[in-house]
Image (cartoon, rainbow, N blue to C red; front, side):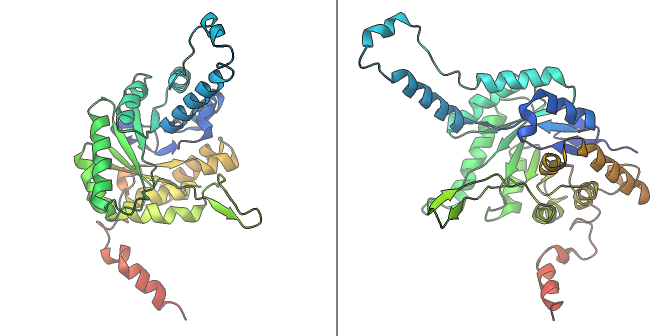
Length: 327
């Protein structure tokens, strides 16, 4: 069967992409993902805020005791933080280790940071760049149009600086997600990744303190991105990639039926081991064979709103039907 798909114009041998995670922190794991059959892999995000924090810590450490023995400083060379160099070298090392497509991920904090680090990431030899737009607007004075305009300006600054294709990992919380998705396509975004999974802080009532923990996704979380991909398919010019809740080959089938170009998965591999990816692939291939499909194009978007006999099902009728079924 032909499992090939196009991701931002990059040809993949199959639609299962390893999402940005700790899997990309060790070369052996990346090689294992390729051996298990991954179509591509997203490198763990480069966070500008982390770079700034590390630089601040280095400056503080170098300053300790300098007020006592200032004259001794002349005996030592000036030390500066390496900025993103360690992360970039790691990507270059990963690029040399595998042949499958690698996509860098970036989360910047300053207006100029996005374009600066995008250029540096491109130089590592990656095939594409995913902008991890992870921000929570908290200023009540800022309007939705202002927030969206800032997003478009970030995209423009990056797209104008790099030649590799750019995708955007979006939040589901925009006032009008279809409008934002449509506008991003106009700003030359090659793919939309739905959605960015926010890790929410919790409150410990015993210690009266805040704490955060990394919680893996569950299969039920696929419903939100699945619905929006089905709603957006055929309405935006960018590829649609489903992220969050992909734990089996049947989940891959759901995503393609809704209209996805590809899927991203990490939690399933972190829970079951990286070789589990090959199990997901076999399950997906078996499903295709049972339904008589020879390629992804045979059924991509078959159950999207665009192709549905009852497109209203994806909107409010879904809610009304649920309520009317309750006794």
